[in-house]
Length: 190
Image 1 (cartoon, rainbow, N blue to C red):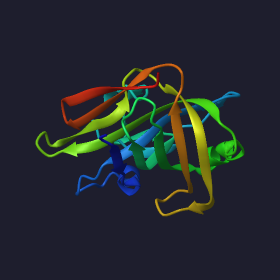
Image 2: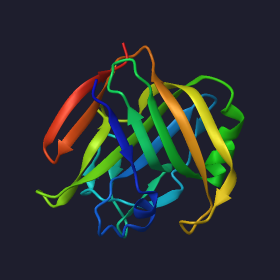
Image 3: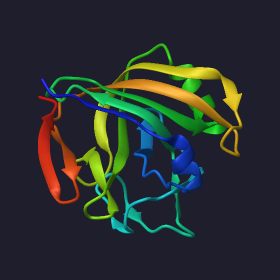
Image 4: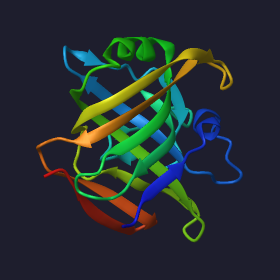
């Protein structure tokens, strides 16, 4: 079965200087039970064109940057309808602290995300993976790990977070693309 696996350059997502055109990824929203909604408190470089984006809300960069909840360093999905999505990302210390107590339990979430890659033919970035419907999508967090170490390598205090998101009982779709304008839709959840 095909696999969507991307190593994403967090340094580029934070700085925006991307002469090599590395892929980048963002967690745009993250809502957990008990009214926990992680703050979009990281200003990241937005590589795609501004406008309505299915992974979140209306994306309007200010100075080329947008507020996001986290910057991804890796995303893996085996593309099956019941396969988990594995994410590694960097979040602010405040958001990581809010997730810390939730490491040993499984719980429903709603989250938005986007992976952007460069199309050398079109000479611009495109969304290579994102939710196929507007707004954050529902899932179940099956595992969560929050690092104890704080990093300042990107100019602000961030913490490494990784999680496994399983599809919940509500079917949804994920949009995958291999180039600008070449999109397929895959089902996720049954």
